[in-house]
Image: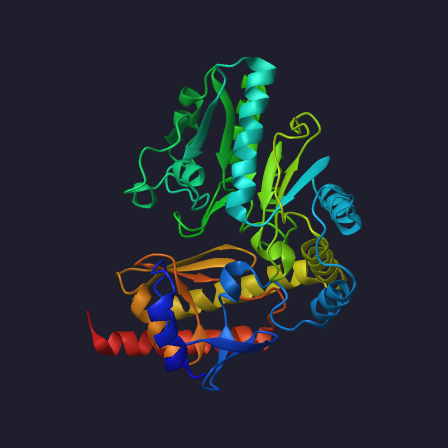
Length: 402
């Protein structure tokens, strides 16, 4: 089928929940994609920070093919060897003692919210159920996770929302100190706000202060690491940059290298679930956990944490060089390969379109910010190619005028 044929079929039968570019990608290799009409693109979206190893990486291809040929799914009524090994691996890499597996970031955050509520009830009393999150946060699309999300635009038309949430400014410890009380069971934050904050990095001093506050008040510190985890920032997990260790974290996106998986990792003290209190039919099955193990092994074996740091710095330096040429650029920011380029005007979506026309896949986080999240395998040459296309796109944008 051609791009136009797929677009027509989608328009007719698929529920209208996305604004889609009029192309269908049908094949990928490394950091490259090809659409149904045979056109090639350099991908700096990576499935929204999901395809950590790019496309058709040999380690993922072999691991998934071998696992499908053996067994794909049995359910959590039985022991699952790759699930046990993945839990061990995540705990060894992090602060955690126990892990629970599901299928998505939103599902992982739902699990964290339930865990926090039980922790509060059992440790401090039934009244202890308040969860504090940040303005401009993003925690998912389910009813409870849009409530946790500190952005009213995601909550419109879906009231009544789940009770028990309070919002405070991000990167400002004072309002949080006032909000945490005897009824607070947890503080839920992204160490780097991505969707709402357009890659706004939490200050080390702020995150360390939140850690100290939660410890002093008996509340759990929970990090939503759905987008910052699994090596995206140049470390295994985003919290490692500040050293402010959480009690609970959620993972998804890059963890499975393109295969859907979510994870909830907790310290022994916070891991209060008992049989029957939480579950996920597909969560942690043989296929997803095998893909995640292959992804983590490859990140370690191929030095992709270091590559994320080096290529991220290369891109930030390149954006700063472009800033000297183009008045439209305000700044570049982020950590590792989780970056944003902020414009001074509301032209980010148009710039993304112009770059797409030139063969570079980018994503506008807002009217003023572009998200730059290539696969962790991206090369120096590919980063230079992307910067060249952005440069050309900015020239076209300037030629169009305001």
